[in-house]
Length: 251
Image 1 (cartoon, rainbow, N blue to C red):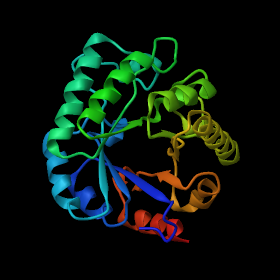
Image 2 (cartoon, helix red, strand yellow):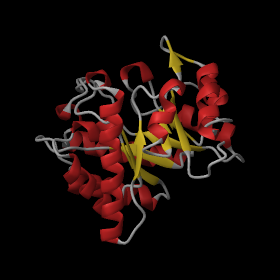
Image 3 (spheres, helix red, strand yellow):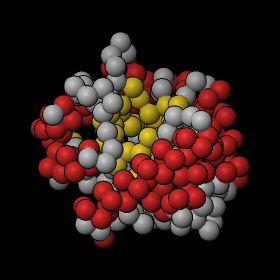
């Protein structure tokens, strides 16, 4: 996709139509259900259909693991991602389903009630995912953590390969300027490199996401070669926005 082989573009999609449009230009597709509500675990049929589309191409699939069930918390806060026995059990079932359906990777994140990475629960999910040959990624809930530096240490120690961040505290990316957000992400990248050196392994990939568009891509690429962008205009996937963003990635 990009002239620079280090650059990656992850595009979240919730329909097979969007999969077909995005796959030729994306490095990776994040499959989810109901992207308008920030996404839930995709249906098995979508994963299978998407795998058929990308089979034989460089594009890979990551399935979001965010269980949706009656009475689940829909707010985008720590409580919504705090580990419960039910949430952990459903996440395990959905990781297995995603592997069976053809995903290459899974993205999940379970937190403690006080806003830290749940080491035990995520460790169980990582072991399960790797047992199925899936790459483990951490969702944008990294921005809900009360301590980013500790969060980075935890993700690196657990063995997460990548995570998404908008460079803000909380979910609303509009609370900070682009300069402030890129500075935060730049520090995350530096912390990831430090942990990689300390642990003797590859750094966790820091993927800016949340308002990433072709118009601001260069600012983000100055701090990280990885981007996550929905490429939506007025709530609808835009092939034009994706093409513009892909062009910036190749620049």
